Each structure stands twice: as C-alpha cells, then as structure tokens.
Length: 287
Image (cartoon, rainbow, N blue to C red; front, side):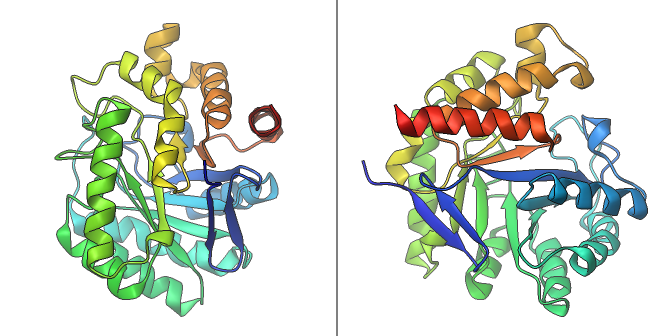
C-alpha cells in the first residue's frame, strides 16, 4: 500500500516515515469534560502552551467551545470573545515551527482566528468536529483561503458514525465534494471521531474503530486520533472520573499509533506519552 505523506506549510511533515505528531489541547471552555485541560487565565494558558511545546508538541489545538454533546451551549459571539485574546497571545509567543489549530465548527470564528494569524504571520489549521456539516460557509472559507482542515467523521451530527466502513464512506463523500470545488486535498487530515458523541455510540464502537484504524489508510490521508481521557476508556475500565483515565489513554494511544495514527491529540504532553508513541510507531514500521 502507498505510503502516506503530507507537508503542512514548511514546518510540519506528517506521514508513515516521520515521527508521530503531538497535538496539545488548550481548552478555553469551562464546560469541557476534563477540567485539567481548561485554561481561563491567559497567563496560565501561555505557561501550559510553552510547556507543551517544550515537551514535544508540534501543534496546539485551541478550542473555545466544548464539543461534548451534553455541554452547555454558547453563542458564536461568546466563542469569539473567548478565543480572541488567547489566539492573540499564542500567535505572539509561539515559535515559528509550531502550528495553531483552531477547534471550531463556525466560519465566523475561523475568520476571526485567521485574521489574527495573518496579523502575526502565523499558520493555522481549522479543526472541525462536524466534518464541515454544521456551517456550510466554513467549507467555502477554507477553500478560498487554502487553509488546511482536520475533519472529524460525521454525517448529520458530530461523531454520529459508528463503524469504520461508515467513516470511510462519509470521508470519501466529503473529500470528493471539496476537490470538486477546487480544494487541494493534500491539506486534509482525517479524525475518525472516537468518543460518545451520540447516544447510540457506546464504547464498543470506539474500541472497534481503534482496532480497525488501518482501514482509513485507503484514503491516503494523515490520520489523527483524539482519544485522551474519553468516556470509552472510563466505561471499559470503570473509571467515571476523567482524572483517572491516564493509563487507559496511554494504552489506547499506543494501539492507535501501532494501527496507523500519525497525529495524537492529547491533554498530557510529557515524556511518558512521547516514549509510548515512539515505541508504538517503531513496532509498526519495523515489523
């Protein structure tokens, strides 16, 4: 099978022959399920961001709205208010080789983040958990401005696809839609959408998606997994508190990397994670 490779800007090469990319999570939403990832104070957020980068993060994922389906909903205006000062600060302090990912489903939020990034001559990626379904204008915006996109597998609602076969089919549909409108498909990263996004998606589906992750390779795109401290780990290990799910996270992450993940989105960027990811990748490519 063809080796997967993509280059984002001049600073980030992703693929089978490159080290696994680490994406650190910076949440600005007090509604987020894991409170250890929430930074409401800008000084605290900047300290955490720099620590993540020093520990090996290549991308920082900045989100101002909790995407958990049971979370309190906020307006687009509130999302922009939360995002703007944090985006300004990150753009100001981040090294040139660190990419900022903006976790949003809305074109107005993406436009604001993009405007700030241009001011500081920074490069950004948009991370949309709805696979460009929530706001059709977001698709037009990323096409017009040639912005890379992380698409999480979704059909009608974020994360509503249950099997790897459904995920592959929907990704094919969306990729085809983008390319027909002139988008460069080398700017696409795929996220299978692990997590309890809809009621019927119980933990068994997440376990099976991770087990069958290599089937996403048929699309020849970098694969991102967002596993960190999620509910399927809590259900499997009987750990209802996300604070107790680190061991399960590391175990599932190692399997996902072994099965083909190129990017790991995580709340915990440290040497333990890096060693586990490195070992899993070495086992994958050497045997």
